[in-house]
Length: 163
Image (cartoon, rainbow, N blue to C red; front, side, top):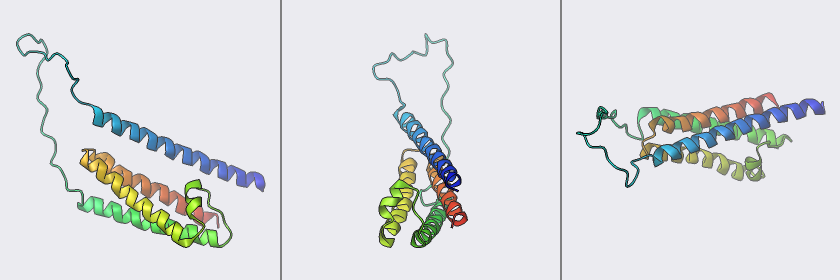
């Protein structure tokens, strides 16, 4: 029986490492794309001597507002799944279970701390989405909520199946 529990915890650790790696890769890609721009003091080719064809970029698609219908739906789903994660985690902790996430474990000693953790997770997701929106990364803006929804959904399913 101990071997079976160890394998489940090991699989959960592997899943956590995969999510952490995905966040790191997304962070690196976001930072590198923000940093792109013209090279300072680089020689500019003149149109008369250049053998390359000059292409003007097409207009970017219309900017959407941050609080559009799709973001409202994503943030509502994020809040709902985080509330479900809070309820399942609290129930499991009160029935003698233990928190597997070391970050949440710090907050899991009280109901108020646990609620603060999940409220902070929701607010953090909205904050990351807003930052990505302001920097023009509209696909990643929506992806941040999707990743949070997916991670919390996995935690809820895991918590419900291991009662």
